[in-house]
Length: 351
Ligand SMILES: NC(=O)c1ccc[n+]([C@@H]2O[C@H](COP(=O)([O-])OP(=O)(O)OC[C@H]3O[C@@H](n4cnc5c(N)ncnc54)[C@H](O)[C@@H]3O)[C@@H](O)[C@H]2O)c1
Ligand SMILES: [Zn+2]
Image 1 (cartoon, rainbow, N blue to C red):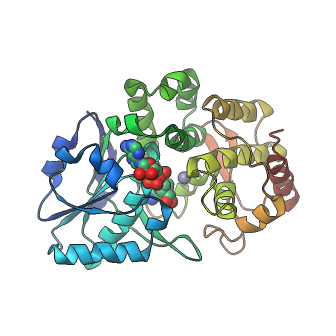
Image 2 (cartoon, rainbow, N blue to C red):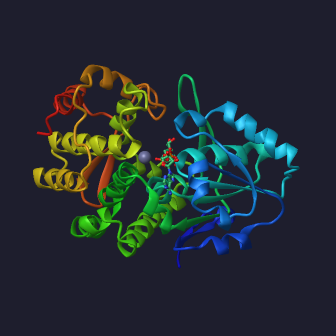
């Protein structure tokens, strides 16, 4: 079993990565437990989790105050108190909702994350962001609430639909770009094994991704500076997701297109080389991910980027690429450059 430390003073915790590690979870539990999950996930592993269970429906719409309220009711009925623990067993939807409930129930109780999608294992279960959606926008109601521990059982990846693996890979590629060229090269060299779900290879991919996220989050827990680099590819991705009502693209797919956009904008501004952009595009293609957002309207997408909650004072903070492992934040990218790149990707062309 591998361990990664998220170093946040009194909020520090460990990420455990391995196979069949549910036995360890018990050691981190005190008091009453409510496990939040989805039926299909629980079916595959229920013998490992002998706790009270609350099921939430599949899909993004479960990240709502309505579902949160149902969980509060269940927690009160079960007599959960400030010493109790909520376990989130599932993908980012379960993690964000159960995390939000743990952050707010009795002003905050302990949370254990057991992420079951690749996206949740490499990204959403680590870092303490929790949220539900509002009718007027995604993740608008939330809190920072670090978990007590994160348990990543790689066996969950075996049953994951292929599209969900690819969605998680969007975030994985991002880590290579923002922080580690060696890791990016590892992904290039091992793309086939990753797609075949070789667990040894995935163990390294998940561990290295968690290390990078942990490093960034440890340096900037509440996203006042460095943590913004985790948004590489996300400025356009959020606009694509909003424009398509979170139905057409999985999050990591939108991030893949968004990373290509950010790289191309970097090239237009002379910050990176054409070779770097091609290298990024090639890896995204190798993973069989979408590379354009053909059919969307570039002007609309452009306008939507300014409605993003990360746009501060009417300015969009672009994360731009210089080299692999080297990015910079830029808030004054000329409109015509952004529109040119968006236009290309909306026309279904990469170049
Ligand atoms: N908090 C954060 O820092 C953060 C970061 C990134 C994304 N997110 C959020 O994460 C959410 C997306 O998460 P997601 O991509 O994991 O989607 P998801 O939670 O909807 O899971 C995708 C699908 O996979 C199924 N599934 C989960 N585990 C499975 C398994 N082991 N085998 C088979 N099927 C399984 C789920 O039932 C679901 O149908 C979004 O709401 C996004 O906002 C949060
Ligand atoms: Zn993301």
